[in-house]
Image (cartoon, rainbow, N blue to C red; front, side, top):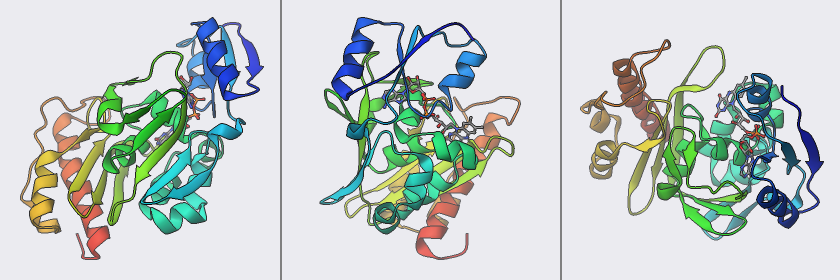
Length: 268
Ligand SMILES: Cc1cc2nc3c(=O)[nH]c(=O)nc-3n(C[C@H](O)[C@H](O)[C@H](O)COP(=O)(O)OP(=O)(O)OC[C@H]3O[C@@H](n4cnc5c(N)ncnc54)[C@H](O)[C@@H]3O)c2cc1C
């Protein structure tokens, strides 16, 4: 680890000002991704600005059809929160599958969305639920936010404050987890709204994406049979030591079938 300084932000405005003043500084939330990167010398921030305790970044509440979750809320809180369980249980189930108990006790929603690991779970729910990412200065639609591997629409000195999830009528997340880390080899979030269906795939490609052919098929016929007839092209999907692209394409179809089966209550 390279040397760095640490400051606990007194408020959101002060945290943003500190980021603006020092382009090499980084905000620290749960530290589950940032600290290992620093230990491996893959990241060398000059200063860590701790935002984990900022009250502006905490809180889970309903606002009409939306569920708003603070950026600093931890995975474990989201998995067990009564409001999330009642209003968007698929999100609670997703959060409960992240990593292990230690990761869920420290890692935050905002940190995961800011990091945008290609195998992270939340991006599928954020994109699937037509969410808005609220920051200290604007609101960004999920469709515009996820831009590529570890790349988002965030500016270097911008802090996520909350995620506004649009609540679907029904939703489910199905993931084929990496056996050691728990990260998604492929995970699929299916959300059925009154006017459309969303199918968001994480882990399979360099960045979360919508499987539009599956969305169209489910809009016509919300059943597992509608997906079993489809194949996701493997072109551009991730191929690495864990699995070739064709395997991930197969997993995307299988996880979509499982999510739909969960929603409809019919066997996959
Ligand atoms: C062993 C292990 C297993 C894991 N398994 C999974 C898994 O199965 N699924 C999964 O999805 N993830 C998994 N993770 C990642 C985990 O979910 C992390 O919590 C998450 O990626 C980062 O969140 P954090 O709060 O720890 O962020 P940090 O590590 O503190 O920060 C990560 C990055 O985001 C930035 N950042 C943090 N908060 C904000 C904010 N509010 N606004 C702007 N930028 C911000 C930081 O500056 C940094 O660049 C795993 C991690 C570990 C160590």
